[in-house]
Image (cartoon, rainbow, N blue to C red; front, side):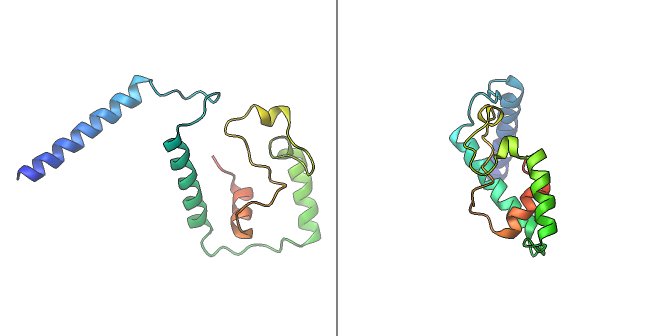
Length: 125
């Protein structure tokens, strides 16, 4: 019985502490300040696991299809390149001011084709 009461009390203290933190406004949410190390780890780990779970056994379209490449290049140029760069471009004024910095999608990352397709199709919050 004492163990149960202790667990309930711990949960109440945790809930009150969390509410106090959320409603106090002490956490700086300004994009001009970076996340804490634990915040970065949490967001990065959550993103990786979410993408892997969302992809599952998704079928990737034929990424070597010339029509698809042309459509994708046109869409990328008009909608993505300002933040994610064009081949050979090192940075843009817009991209330099963003936090977190958008990845350079012209460079091969660590994602496989299915993950890359899913990320481009759905984006990352």
